Length: 416
Image 1 (cartoon, helix red, strand yellow):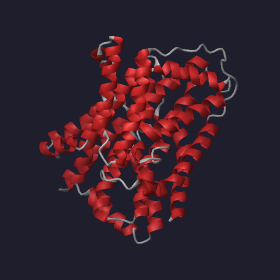
Image 2 (tube, one colour):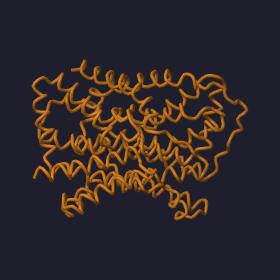
Image 3 (cartoon, rainbow, N blue to C red):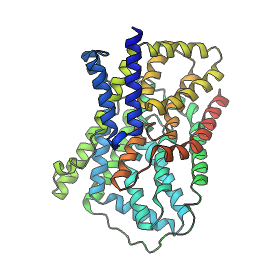
Image 4 (spheres, one colour):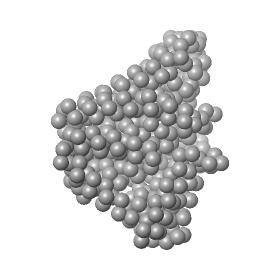
């Protein structure tokens, strides 16, 4: 039994390392699927259990499909170029002002459309804005990546991981604000200040001011309305405690269909431009977590939470910090799944559950594979010809995430 457990842990660790390091520059999905395949080949997880694990991600897959369709439709119809020209014009030649505009837009996008939307929808627009304004793109792109996680507990819909951690049953909105309003402000504010300080050298100088306005055609206006309608739908279904995946997929498909009909554009050609590899990546991660669960790791985590619950405030600080760091080792989606199951078994105090949510949402700002949103962000910037390596992101992440996490957790503990 110990040999089987060791083999399972070894394969999961190797697969996770492959997702992080991307040997041979192969896509992250290759390594997650390779790990899942090895678990099946060596009999470390039964096929039925693997299929069940994959099925647990259905809501996430649907959510991502909807968001990716919205993003690609908006990109093809010039919505990103229109947003970019408007942002570059309002910056009035100031890199710092453009940085603040991007950050503020990221807060709104993450709050009402989710952190994945910031990675998928906003990032291409920000890159276009940097190109138009002749700005250094990386500070603006880092702003997209970090605010996607820093603002992801403003509302329950701001991050799919919130739904995972609470097992699909969210607290009432008033209770949510009581727990997370001030910690969200702390996380967003500290992340902004630290990132601006880290990137101060690249935010010096001036930008181009002779920005030509970009007209928005009928297809672009329809895509914008589709995105706004999706935000409204997500707020409503969240208030009704309905899973977000299917409504998001329907909204994305409907928007794509309407825009393609208006512009006489083939939806098949549009679908070919989407990076679908993120779906098997998520499926592979679910299988890895299921295999770990079968080794008893979740029962061990639950026992740890019960022990920490003896001192709730100290336990909240400890568990939130540990989960924040663990999210970077195994991605916050599977980490949230492990934490959710452990919470259901241990029934810790509310302050500890809130601290775990802060950790699973904000902790991934440390590394490029900490969250699904950051992986989507990586795919978006690679498509534009940019790339950020593990160590380059870690340098920025360490200087921004650690103080932001301390501020958010500290604020939550002060609330009591």
